[in-house]
Length: 198
Image (cartoon, rainbow, N blue to C red; front, side, top):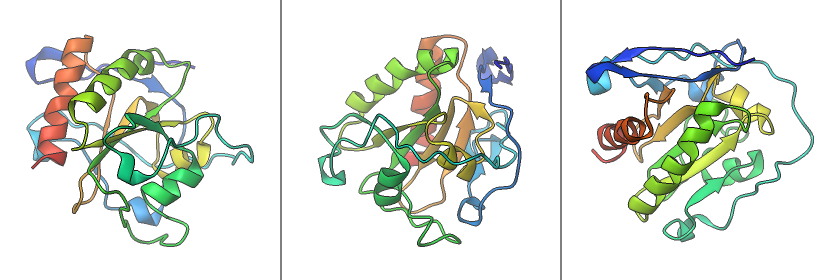
């Protein structure tokens, strides 16, 4: 079921996202994750209220990771499975109570689903950003339909949701997109500057 969430943001932007109808508590390793809000950027808060308890799928995703982390400059946006997430981002099975980032670059993760209209708008923007920030930021995508355990671990309740991972601080989560692709790209660039490039 799709649901439009509209939030006013500085400059009169409208934020759109799809509701995934999930509820629950965050896992211990994600407890320190902040939401992108006024304390970080001087804008309206984006709420993320916990992790859903979803049934785990035994089948792997059809979009595996495309190479080792040292090739981050050339591989563009990488689709993560649970297995590649554990190797490249955080191994929450070995360290369930602590966020230990394994990446070589700051990262942005796009939590999406193929049926989500705002996610389809976001996809080419993320591809553009991956080219613009090549060698500085790694961009990942996680399909919440096929990677339900990862969606549950981060409490994804609406999509698209975006996790910004700095090298030495806790990640920051934001949700939704702006009214136009241009405003959405500008919003992402501001979040990247505020969170990843400082």
